[in-house]
Amino acid sequence: MSLRSALQHVFASQAELEADEERHESAKAGCTAVRDLPDRRRSTVNGVLRSVTLRPREGVPALEAELYDGTGTVDLVWLGRREISGIEPGRRGSFEGMACTVVGRSTIYNPRYELQPRHGE
Image 1 (tube, helix red, strand yellow):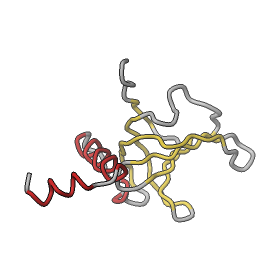
Image 2 (cartoon, one colour; image 1 turned 90 degrees about the horizontal axis):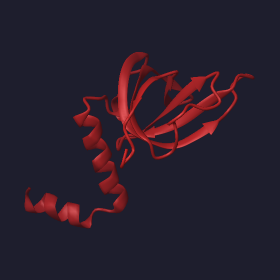
Image 3 (cartoon, helix red, strand yellow; image 1 turned 120 degrees about the vertical axis):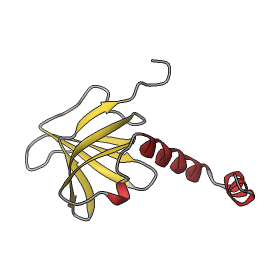
């Protein structure tokens, strides 16, 4: 580690350290960085769920989660679902599906997923 990178690490904010960790985990899993998600292409992303909400879309229940990978966020939307066991804030995992842009935000509808075990599981 160079002196410059060592100093950056020492003076980095908690948010910057967390972002670095998320980017590292995503790259280690061989996933696409959220900032590099191609529109209308099947992709796999990895990160931590920041929020999970139930938000009906056109009268249909929809479970929405925001995934953060250190480079940005992507919305994950499961149509017709009110809840999914294990899909909760703070949970880490990999999510795969067709990425698209909806109102300027990267979104993946009905993604396949693999959750990582919680600490201590």
